Every structure is written in C-alpha cells, then in structure tokens.
Image (cartoon, rainbow, N blue to C red; front, side):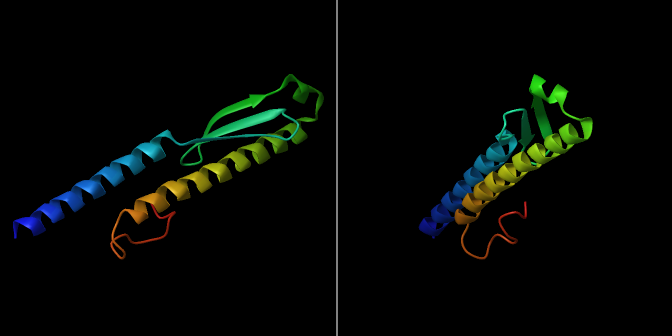
Length: 109
C-alpha cells in the first residue's frame, strides 16, 4: 500500500509542478509583431492585451486612417502569435496529465 501512496503523492506533486510551470509561462507570455515596413510594432500579453505599441516617425506622413489600420493589424498579428504560444503552453500541460483527466481543448484555460 505504501508504494501506491508514494506513486499517488509523486503523481500529484508532478501535476502541481506542471500547473505552476504553466501559470508562470502564461504570466510571462509576451508576443511582438513588427509590420513589414518596420513602421509599427505591437506587443501583447498572454491574454492578448496590448502592452506596448511603437510607431516610427515615418507614420506621420501617412493619413490617420491608414495609421489606425496599421496599428490594429499589427496588434492583431501580435495577438495571434500570443494565442499560438498560449496553445503550446497549454498543450504541454495537457501532456502532463493522464488521458481523460483534463477537460477541454488546448485553449480552454
């Protein structure tokens, strides 16, 4: 019986470690994207919230609507990169649990 309890405790400790690692990864997740012309860079966190936006001086010669569209598009690309990275982190978490013990897909957290 002691062997079973040791295995259970070790399994729980490993799962806790995996959860803590996942939380740290999600908390520290940042994704950046720079437009092809280099005039706009956006950074988002693991939840897709904008954490930084940098514009080159060259955008001052463009119409405001064009700059707005560039900023939105660049931020969306950064958010897509963050979503992909988040899915990888959550997929690693799912691998650490026995099949059937984690509900939902890789983006369910």
